[in-house]
Each structure stands twice: as C-alpha cells, then as structure tokens.
Image 1: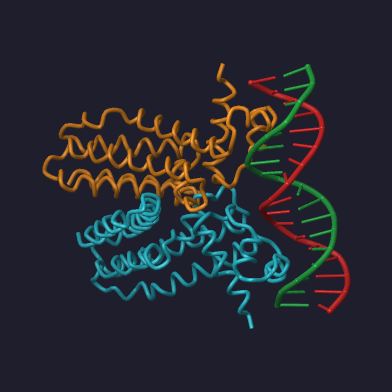
Image 2: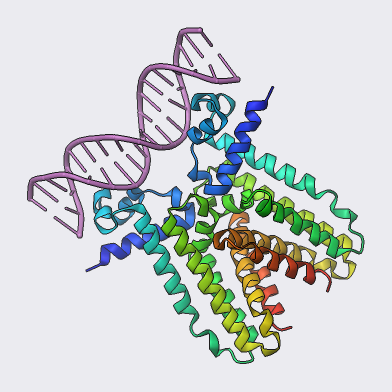
Length: 184
Length: 184
DNA sequence: GTCTATAATTTGATAGAC
DNA sequence: GTCTATCAAATTATAGAC
C-alpha cells in the first residue's frame, strides 16, 4: 500500500500552497500524517524529492482534468470557461493558490529540480491553452500563444489577489473578463 | 546616519524578492551588509519588523513613481503604458518579481503584520489604476475597477511566468495586450 | 515501514561588553 | 551601533533497532 506516500504528498501540497516551499518542514508533514519525521524520509530521502513529487503529481492531475485541448472546435468561450473553472477550483474547493504560483514566486530559493518542474507546469499549461484556442478560433490562430500566456498570467495573479485580499470576487471579475475576451 | 538601516532593507528586499520571506535569514542579511546578526536585531527587533518595513517602503516608492492617477485625461493608453513600465522595471532593472507577488503567494505563512501590508499594496494599486482609468475613459468608468484588478493580476502573473520560464518576452506579450485593451 | 536516538546546522533572538 | 557570546528551538537529515 502506498497510502502513506500519498498522504505525505497530500499534506505537503497543502502546506506548500499555503506557506511556500520554505515555509513547511518535514516535521509539519509527519505530524499531520501521524508518523515520525524519520518515516517521511523513508518515502522521500530529501525535502527536494517531496517538492518534485508534489509538483509532478499536481501538473499531471491539472492537465488530466482539462482533457483534450483539440476538442473545442469553434468554441473558444467554452475552452476558456473550462480553463477558468480549473483555477476556480483551487480557490473555492481548496481555498488555496495554484501550487505553481507559489513555487514560481519563490523560484530563486528553490532546489533546482523543483524549479524545473515548476517551469514544466507553466510550459504544459501554455501549450494546452494555445492548442485549445487554435482549435476554437481559426481566425486568431497566430495570436493563440499570446492569448494563452495572458490567460495563464491573469489567472495566477487573480488567485494571489483574491487570497491576499480575502475577496473571491476579484477572481470572478478577472475570470469573467477573460471569458468575454475569448469571443472577440 | 541611518545608512545601515537602509542597507538592511535593500538587502532584505532583494532576498525576499528572490526566495520569499521564509527563504532568507537575518544572518543572510547581516553577511551581505557586512555586520553581525545581532546588529541587524538592533535596527529591527524581529524578522517580522523587517518584513513590514520592507513592504511599506516598497509600496510608498512604487506609488510615488506612478505619480498622480488623475492626470490621464482621455488617455487610457498612456496610463496603462506607464503602469506596465513600472512592472517592467522590476523584471528588467532588478531581475526580480514584484515584492508583493512573492509575499502574496506565501501569505498563509507570513507574520500577520506582513500579510496586512501586502494587502495594502494591492489595495493602493487597484485604487491607483481605478482612478487612472476612470479619469481617462469616461465611457467605461463603471468598469474601471474591474479593469484595474485585471491589469494588476495579469502583470503580477506575467512576472512570475517570465522569471520562471526565464523568458522576458512573456511579460512583453502580456503588457502589449493590456495596453491594446485599454484603447477599446 | 516505522520507530528511537542522534547528529550537524541553521535560525531567531537576547545579554552585556565596548 | 556594533560586537562576542550564547541560547533554545527548529530543521534536515542519518543510523540502526524492531
């Protein structure tokens, strides 16, 4: 059973998304899981290993939830609405930031491998959005990548603003605007 | 002479903007300034005091550089261009994120007072943008606050993406788009 | 796989001399 | 204002028993 391993990742993800990679300790994780710190190190030799595993799992899940980006034929609005929904879940269901917004913000103080996997999250998300927009709005195909970067940046920033100001309407306002822009 | 005090703030700001509030220590600061950790605590009794002072100074300087938001009569493009320039300086001149993007990302793991001052940065920036947009585009006055939140969110996110991906063109792309949107 | 025990280092902070 | 000296606690692990 890899139950404890998954529990360690669950708790670590929640802690990173709340306080950052430098804001949690293996002891915090151990306490929350109900084991000792030494046992955490059995599953993940170093803290960086935890960071990498959390980020890989987060990225895979995030993109799996988005589905096939090529399915939005002539429907950019649906694509962007779905994408905004994915970020809304981070805020509303979890009450937390996107993992990679947090890691990206402290990227200079991260173990190299964790920074690398943070970058991969962004690259894969920009590519997903670019494809979804290219499939759905033929006329603006050339601008699809610029649109993708804009949408991702605005949503990551909107989560930071919403949580800092403790005001979910900031996110909703930005999300609405992005969906509206997708139609023109 | 408050030279050392300012030096401590300079170094602390740079360290926070690179590694986050939990990613630097008073010893790091002392070494960079060329004094001992105990001397840092003479100027700032606690680490939270450093965080508050850094954030207050950063916010005041940022808004001072922006100038009077009411001066953009019928010229939303100039207002947004100037605002984008302010964020570009963080990236190009300093090679770093906005201080409050970093602090906002780890807000759950911050001393309360530091989180409060992070919030103030966002509130003051949204208000500056709202006024600048209201002054410059009468027809869209009702949407000025929504526009303000969108612009701030997109720029904070664009800095995170640009630095994580080590690609300044991400920021430039988003900035260009925001300036373009200001004209419609 | 989990534990106890422990090590080496770092951290935030204080006391008191100069 | 800055230093030396010191501290208690926290942090990231490792060794080895069970």
